[in-house]
Image (cartoon, rainbow, N blue to C red; front, top):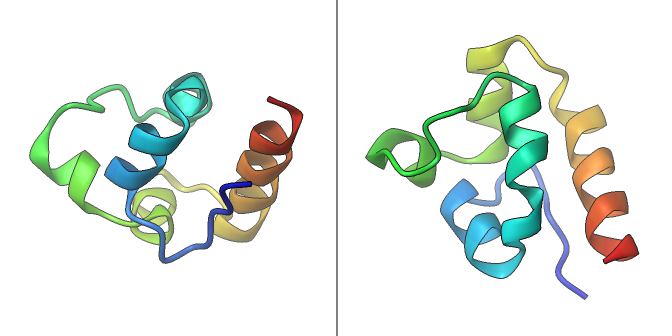
Length: 67
């Protein structure tokens, strides 16, 4: 199973679990293909969008585990 941490690069998540894209879109991350979005980690993305990184990581991992 693929596990996400706050340090995981978003591009890696999308590569391993593209089904998670709607979760990123729900926090306001709509530009998944741009260099900044794909090259930053989860914690950086959460800070930029005012989202609690720990909660989002938990949500991502639960979603991935259910796939």
